Image 1 (cartoon, rainbow over the protein chains, first blue to last red):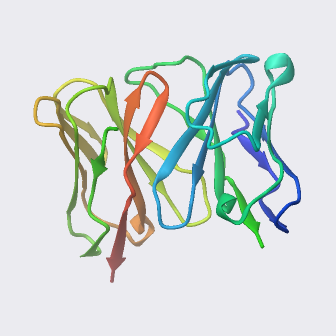
Image 2 (image 1 turned 135 degrees about the vertical axis):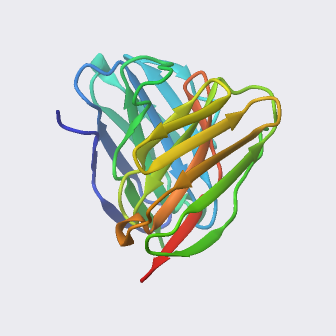
Length: 117
Length: 108
């Protein structure tokens, strides 16, 4: 099966601009997650969709970040306006169920490296 | 929060064994994952422990002690391709909390 796909792989934008990241989860995976790794820090949770609904958005840093998952398939994460501290690698992950003990857990995409200059 | 601590870097020679320790606060996690991540690539699943004890999967084994808030990943018969970052992550109902990762360097 195809894995989790993220687009673009890299993005360089100027401070104040808008960027939209896209994630295509594995087909049939109702659960979709966004994570972010800022330089030198650990990967941190941003939010979790179950189908098209936001289950948990406690990790979203501020209201400059907007995530959507219309139709419960792919998801977008928009940053508007981008600030320097938003630079990092944004990962998307998907899973078939929310909690799957002993299974293959969460499948991650390769990430989008965002650089704000 | 649930701090997750793991060493920053470990170096070992090809064919050797390396054990990566991970400690965390003892409440809030359903289980513990280990992921491998090569530079610029997606983290890939290695193991998941929900019960205490050792889970063996080929050259990789993972151990969990929930009461002690302790896990380790054991890599045996190291190969050059095992050079990567190894991430310990606690699972709290779909929300993973990651450690900063341990960079393993395998030398010839």
